[in-house]
Amino acid sequence: MKFAFIENRYKTIFWAAIAKELRSFGHRITWLVQNPVFSPDDESVFLAPFPRCTDLHTDLDSRSHGLHWARAGDRFINYFGGNDRHYYHYHLQIKKWLDDQTPDVVIGESTLFHEFLVIDECLSRGIPYLHPSTPGYPGGRFSVYAYATKEPLGESQDIPAEQECLAIAESIRRREKVPDYMTLPSGREPERNHPRPGSLKDRLTILRGYLQGERFNTPSPLKKWLLDRQTKKYLSTWEQLASAKAPPRGARFVLYPLQMQPEANIDVWGQKFRDQTKLISDLADNLQQGWHLLVKANPKAKYELSAELIDVLRRDARISPISLTDSMADALNRVDLVCTVTGTVAVECVLSSKPVVQLGPGIVDSGRGCTLLSETGRIRDVIQEIETNLFITASDADRIRLIQRLYKTTFPGMISDPANSPVVMTQQNIQTVARTILEVSEQCA
Image (tube, rainbow, N blue to C red; front, side, top):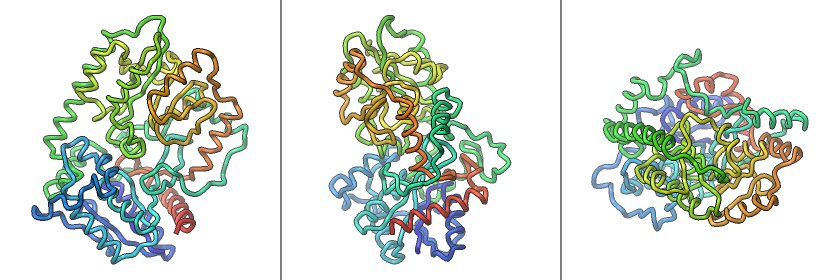
């Protein structure tokens, strides 16, 4: 088989190790690189040239070309003031690369604009595009998603016995087991060979790409510094509001935990509800009398915080921010209902017998413990069920089935970049992940 890999900053280092392993099995490899600073040491690299000024135009209108989803999920447009005038140039380069290389399978993420363009072209050509990614649970495992969706491909057979599944459910309910991504890199990991995110070396590496011409995924250092400084100010204001705006006594509560942005989980997979400020206002508009909306900041808060959101939290009497020092466990104990778009909290709620509504795609089915909604207005129906004691939470059998499904749709191994998680570069992990990618690819190709 011929595998194509898509460069994505430090993730490219991990992909390169997977590619090397696949090549050792006799498979061929090709690469598409957008940022030359992260180009792998491989003879089969196609480096898409940066566009000249004359290449920047709107001949490929992403709003009418079927690429509206790509533009809507493009973090450079959404958070850094960019545009899509470079899409046409890169679209031509990607078509040429696919024409020349004719890969059987493409491996990459669904987070950056050039990956979106590759996904769009793969869809039109019928080429499988696999996005290996680590979900929040069950831990130490990864899923393989199709194209820019959260649709898992393949099925794992190593599913624990029912009693073990129940024990895992209990460990998640008691928060003894937390998602891998909640562990922050220390910079002192024994396996670390690459700079810790945010370190001087990391910033200089990113700056080098920017100075060479990468201005389509990488914001100017000044703009990013200003945004990060603004985020710190918003967090300070948040805490002041949490202290000054106590929730009303005697009310029943809905919790909305903010999802970090930019993040494919909500910007791409949960795109319909990616405007979280609007979502919070809409939820408040649909609360029954006697109910109040609590909003929890993400522990890794970034650009989901905005002046508009702070203004809503300040002005709307139906909404209160929770203190940054409050844990998720504390928040869940206070509320009657949780709402999320695509957050891992949906799994935690079902396993904890806490009513939850989910607005985007996820591993949790609509049924006992969770209601899937396509619009915020329907939360009124769920609130009515809770008030009349008709909302049915998950039984032990339901919890076991959810854990079984988490295992069935995931495989042993860890997916990340070595800057955030150096342990992914161990030989055992590379071999394990590569074998799974090969097995899933053979089923899809």
